Image (cartoon, rainbow, N blue to C red; front, side, top):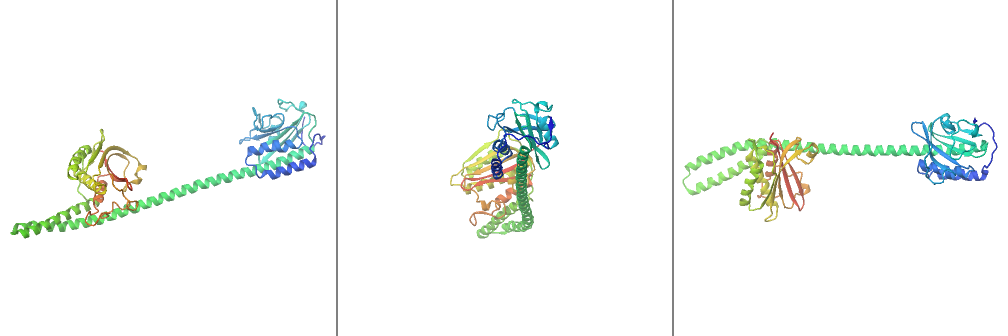
Length: 446
């Protein structure tokens, strides 16, 4: 027989009013420190209902779909295993007395379970039952259920006690839910802040790269224009020196003209380097075998520079598209830098390899490099390395850390200009005290 709680019943085995107040007061104090829903349900079953004169207590939790209830905590003979329910019972909404309490959202008292057709018999059959729903934020969070072996064991007093416990439990459930929502919002804010910081960093990096690209482009234009005009002046000077050589009769005059001629040649070499940086060099790209060029260069390099050269050439190297004379000039410039920066007698290492470049790898390059197939030529030294504060300037024309007269500061500028004009680029890896590696990326021939 299913009854609502309006009927007055006999009250048996009820805790004294003083004990009840102490238990509820302790519950109210401990509520703030209970950290989770699971701890809350076990605390209510064992430390609240279990101390209010009820023989047993089972707490069911509703699922998110509001269709089923599952046993999550218990106290009494049905739970002799502490905080561990063996084969927890699952009850659909509307099924049995507990399911009806969840569906109707109202407390239910049954005086005699044997005459009630909705009773779902448990391992320990009972005679009377009381169910009080837990309502949190307008949803059924669960049901507090207690059974008794005697008929008519629950009445107004028991209902009032469980309703009070249910109200306090529901309030704590709302606090825990709000705490979880706050943590989720905080996590979302952290993610948003991280994304914003990353986007800001990316934007600053892009702005820096754009500024560097514009700076290099402006310097390249200016350098190319200046080199072109100056080259015209050198042409006039060199031409007149050759005419004067025909009329020169004494040795002093010839020596003077030779000095002028040598200076003009050095000036012409500087002009070619400046034009290379400004990407105005007349290149004649061919399909070349970098391994062959490296092999020949290394033989000449060891004889002329007096430095040992270690080679590591890929056996299946792709053909590259580049101007062979420009490649030799760049190798010479890098080898000279490596020899001058390394210890006396220090070696140079040259490596050739096939590379499939991806978009993500281009961030360390001084210029954009289209993803695709490249032949990489690396020149490494064992020198002191490049200081961090100089890394951003090493490709600037006329920048040099050498003493006055020891270098023009156009070697790396020429290399970068030729590589960009050839459809490739240069990457640098350097660590103080451990040397530097310059990597030239040549487009692979189709």
